[in-house]
Length: 324
Length: 154
Image (cartoon, rainbow over all chains, first blue to last red; front, side, top):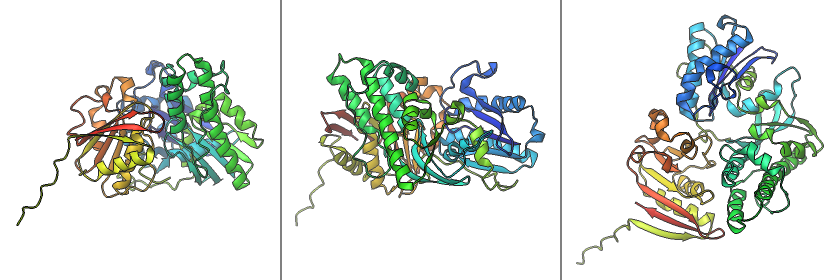
């Protein structure tokens, strides 16, 4: 059994999986699975992780119906993320592993999103391309085996999820507002406004700063325009950029298998648009697309673990600290 | 022998109109040339005003060659491949959760250390004194199309 902890951003996550990739438990604090979380969305970052990490681990073990004595490998997200938040999960993992004389697997968060596709009961096998789009990340990964990936393109400025959330805020929908924007857009005309899709950006990189600013100007210049039309057009531009870059990457690599990861993978119009590309599309269940610890446990199976004594001074790494 | 001319006194506040992202990055580089370890630069301005673009130019000037992306979700990006380690902060989301006061104060302490340069977007979410001594304040405003009015106070 593998116990994994993920605290790279807002959610405090713990999970237990077996070596074959079957999920025994996958606890995410913000989902309010247990009464002890009170169903409250956690505050941002460190303090809340500290309060919740023990509870999340207890719940993960209890739901998996295993004890710490059954765990053979402890894993934690090492980065990228907020270092103060990452260190809470990483320190907890070190403490558990050291106390039980177990090896520890430090896992890259993005490799976790890729490895979500390797979870059972029906893993999606490489080679494939993986589009990861969330609040903090937007990239196209070329996955040739279960051990790593190559970045084909990534965002030059904002992440796709951030574009959704900031757009929602501009449209008065609150924050985080990705799902709210999608709901408003459902009643709108996606062709009412022409927002940029970063066609001027070379290669397979993404850029969402332009579409964000275009929405701001459209709102200023058309104060009486139907909000649902603005939302639908804005969403369409984000979806089109993601889909066109993905199509281009599939063409360039000759690969005909596509997987997705990250919270933006829950967006309905994006899923529909990607399905129309005509390649084999794998969309993990929503709780495996957003940040979770099962994906970290999955990736941990393909990391060379550090033996007891070798991980006590292991440090976390921030977003931007390591080149993609 | 004539005494060497004194350098012109540095203007405490300067307002420049940038015609696009390239010029905004160059202004960021200008500010970066005067920064020393421990310095904190605040960047205010609404969505799309060019805060991250300004930081990109500054980080390049400080020797960072990798990407400079928006830290809105992660709150902090770190760039450590240049002459001085850089923390690139964005407090936008902290404003939603009661501000920095609702957080563990040690969360950002490592990002504002004496050996680093810190750029802080959306600093309004932090208390007045919680970010330490400020080397420069930058305010960016939309001025139509790609143009931005950029005010730099030291």
